[in-house]
Image (tube, rainbow, N blue to C red; front, side):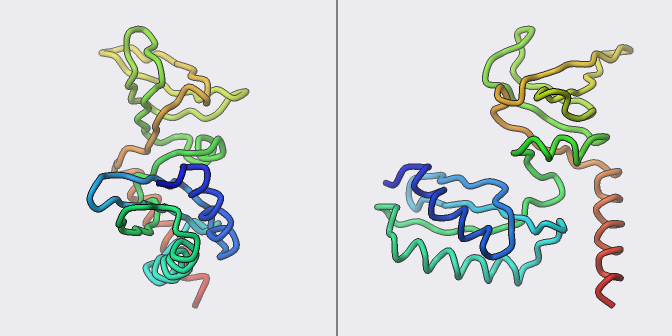
Length: 172
């Protein structure tokens, strides 16, 4: 099986040349394996037609290079509303929303935290974590975050819906 670095070297340039940003790529499972490619447009709106076109382009590249020994399924999707946060810019962009973090190492005997995303400060992800009646502002080095995603809330849904409607009106 090809290394994650080889897969990313094949997939990332193709995603970018198609006008998208690679959000996340994962090879998961065993039989069949699933190569999950999550992409986004720079304007934040990736539709089904975009996913289909990108899937065809990636299929051609992956078929030619054949980096995965076993049978696999290519899955191309948008990050969705409760998207993963994968680059530092995501933490600034989605400040004010609830987030779930998983750390590489435990802090205060915990590796999972939920809280309000404050943003990014000198390479540290800043969140407010509620515990009972108190709120603690916590900072985690970006490099110590194993996984992070937005939590689906009414506020996130409303903002996504509002942004989608504004973009649709721009096309009229």
